[in-house]
Length: 393
Image 1 (cartoon, rainbow, N blue to C red):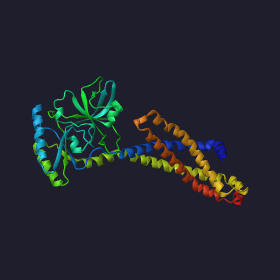
Image 2 (cartoon, helix red, strand yellow; image 1 turned 180 degrees about the horizontal axis):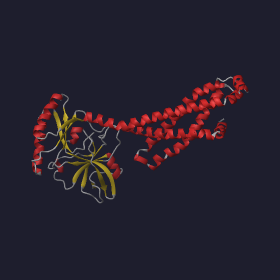
Image 3 (cartoon, helix red, strand yellow; image 1 turned 90 degrees about the horizontal axis):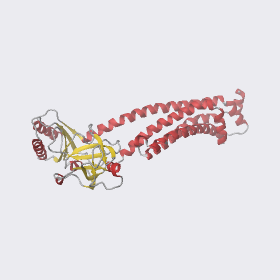
């Protein structure tokens, strides 16, 4: 039966070539769409790695009249003390603008001897882990004992550890920033990956440097507030901080809102792709349905003759559906060859399992679409009476 179907398709290869090309293009597009969906789904189900609930971000610029590191350190200390004096504040942390769910990034090279990788760099203080409840997997977080350290203490995430050291122990090793050699930054801790770029972002290399309290400029203050912190408290906090900073360009944002915003931004290209893919699928379905319907009208005499010699309606219907499945199989074999190049060549640096799952979903979807489109024309063919078909011929 299968050999007979291949012969029928080969005899009409010019008529079927356009349909197979349409299926091939549809498979490639569906493969790309499912790859994005599977990747987003896998990232969404990764552990968050930190707590963002009841965490507020306060952006600020330091007063211009502060002109030396000691004054900057004293200023930050007074601000911290002022904020901690409020009963609704549980913890305070100073950091750079590169914070969870923020728009600012600080990407640069990190090296371990000749191995150099890109990493997202964060400048944080000792209480950063307490505000976000970051769990340390190996070693420790920053503390007062780092004040007199000869090398700069840094904390890295699990992804950066694997990129630089594989399965080796990273604690105590020295790394540099974008060059070669041993470097002057000492790893004191390794933390789990944080989904600080949104629920749908993949794992990325992360390097956490200890903030210098005497640095100039501004940044962000992360506040862990109690459950009874309401809008009235937020308004009062804003007034206190704006008068202390003597700067009108300040703002307070909730990390929960920032998370929702960045998730929506990341979903926009996927939604657009889904809409385009949806129109393509509709066109493919209509084209396939039309071709099968046309084949029935052109092959009435053939179908009538087969019914006259004893072929059942189920066999007629099965033949038409089988032809459509064989056409789709040929297209999927060619499409799968190109799809397999993505995990083999590590294109876009995604896990191989993501590509394989997406390929399987795209194949299943094409087969399901073909069976749905071929079912009704097959039923119509099975209902043709031999006498009527031969009479029309």
